[in-house]
Image (cartoon, rainbow, N blue to C red; front, side, top):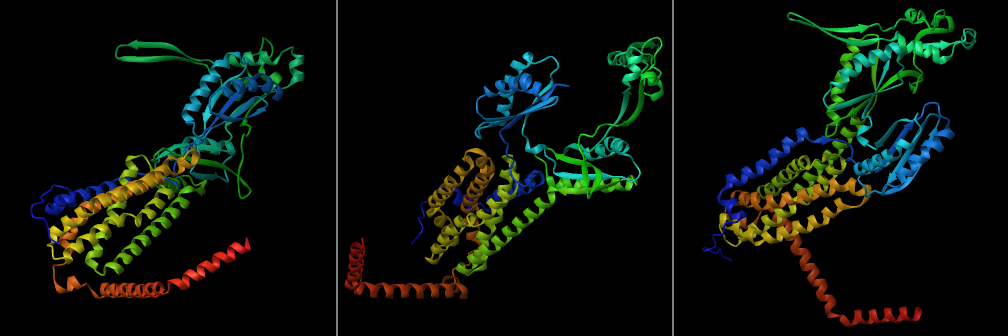
Length: 550
């Protein structure tokens, strides 16, 4: 086997061998892009999956459940049912409110479904009773669920004082943590003004509830009154006569002779609780940390942890504790997958070393593994994917696939070297010979993995990143195998000495074992072929028995 001295084609293997710096720089750019992507890629437990569920809510203060169902719920249900793609509708009517849940087909985009429902609801909204308010359409959003839950307790502060402290200080501090979109508060009770009317005194004064309400509405006066300009001053004038103190409210006249204190009791107190949060049997205030889109859950957890430690040091009369943290499970799962990935890389390299029998030769496919896997992280960031359990699982599965092309190229290059071809020529000719075989293998694997990303329904959304990550890693491995591998083979394959031609002890041992197995198979096959009639008679006898049994 000799090289063709006239063949001077400018293809990827020949350019990589003649210009090794170019091949190194191209592959280093892939690695650097992957390292840079690690800093900004989203880290989460599972890929983002939008459920095709839309909720319609409406309130009608004071309406009975029967009234809500007859006058509000049915009208909204009829409008929502006309939207394309609705699979099921569930409605619940309560006193003063109604909720309608619309479940769409998995193939429907939730954003388009929400817009269609809004248009349908707006058409019937004018026909609803005048007292109906706050008709809202909400799409299901997994991003709106808290990733971190905190509890706030205090032995000295009341519930309303603790609520005010959380609203003014704690929530503001937590919102300043990078990646935090919102802080939800549970179990809070705001400080409200309560006016309790006494029906007997109202009747004796010949007053109604509307009279008291009109008097209270007219008492609050806080309106702009223009501005005053004088020289270099510009003053804003405001008429502020708002009433906020209990005594001032009690002194308000309802008519010429009756004040509020004569027919009602006025006091400040906690608002009626809409939710309760208990921790170990103790009532606490709950905080839910909601992450921003495309943010890192682990970094948010670390930032919130530092903020909680600072708040506990600043406020000695409260205690902020972490109830649950999704980052604990995510970091643990990712650590396990990364450990599995590391073990997979080591095992693959050891297997290659066992069959190649040379550390220098094993180094060539061993380099292609991190280059292809790290470069895949850059593609994850560019496509808007996230580092999660499924994408890391795809990298684990790709560990054994990305070295296939490199092994094929390396083995063929070494075969040319054993036939006496020089290192540079063997690297170019050996890679050219398997060039289209490598491309065909890569195309076949991509054609297997990409359709996984197009599965219908939630399964397709869940495995979309999985399929594309596998396909991208295999595609990068083929580029590395056709550019970096021939360049390394032309430099790392030892010179044409007797030892390099004969191979090392490990490789010679493996070849001897393979030769022994081949000779054993040859002897067994030859022995079987010498007595074909015996096996034919047994096969005929077995068929006759089977026919008789039928």
